[in-house]
Amino acid sequence: MLAMDTLADRVRAARLEAGLSQAELADRIGKKQQTIGKIEKGLTLNPKFLVEIADALNVSPHWLKGLSPDKTPQVSRERIEDELKSVPDENLQMILDAVRRAKKAPEQGA
Image (cartoon, rainbow, N blue to C red; front, side, top):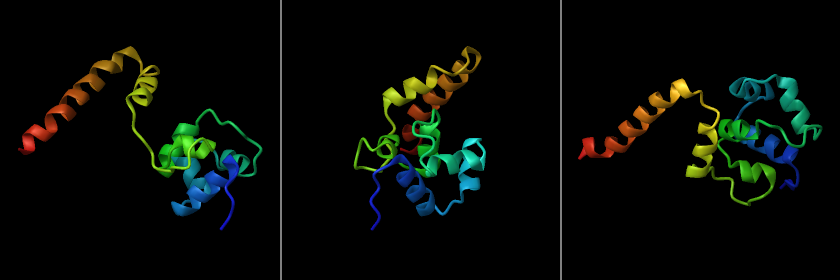
């Protein structure tokens, strides 16, 4: 078994486990294949879009960074709040409506 000491190792391993090429992963996050190649070669150590990579690979960003032994992605209120900070004001109502629908969803199945 390979040691996964670096971000490069963990991204490569998760990508292969997901059955994706570098180009496919890059396409999922809106980047170029060369960008993924640089990460996997260890040339990019702290990509600003690490959360997007983790989401595309269905792993925890903390695991990719080497901060947690658990690969399982966790949706947290804190992460949602961080994401909302970059949403344009004109889209916030749409998101609020979706949250309200999601809260009601279990009641409809009862």
